[in-house]
Length: 117
Length: 110
Figure 1 (cartoon, each protein chain N blue to C red):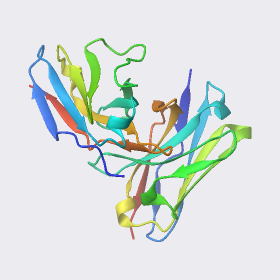
Figure 2 (cartoon, each protein chain N blue to C red):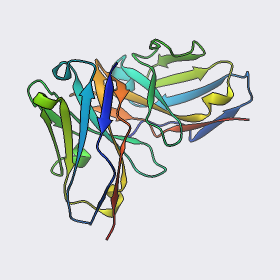
Figure 3 (cartoon, rainbow over the protein chains, first blue to last red):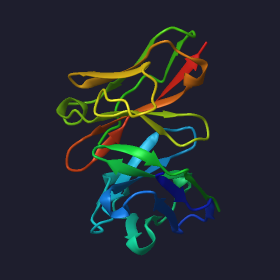
Figure 4 (spheres, chains in turn red, green):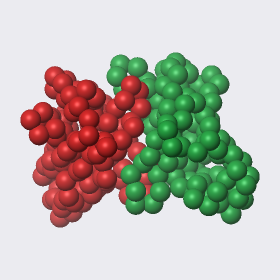
């Protein structure tokens, strides 16, 4: 069965960077784009961008351009999302989600990133 | 890209029907038949319940249905059940390989 398993919670100081991983199993990793989304406490979902694991191509939402980097390691079927220059309002749960056509059919369990001095 | 507009909350008694609207523009909802809906229970990851405007994935109850008219999409829950109490989000393709989500709606079962 398809599974996306994300790395554990992180606590970071303002200005630092965080790298969240998303390990895929149960399907061909290179066959589907991977989305990343952010959800601040009590807030809605915000699309951050996607990566094509087949060739590493990326497309970032305007709000995150310049601060986000999405990469992948096909040898271990894992996608990564790194967010730099963290601010307190980056405190959120970050999700990876498999993109099937134009919708996200499988989601990771979420990774809580807390930014605090 | 601005978030799609959803009502903050809707409510209904068990067995009733509720409809959640999702309003965008001709550049997203109105321009493509790629609207999806997600249900999110507290502390859980979102779950896909509708894709491509009105298609239900396997295992999603028939009481969930989707539609679209112009720049607005809708999710209807017919025969509301206690377990339907959750947050619901719409999402639309917005061209140029960009997706945009709605502001989210809390469904309360009275």
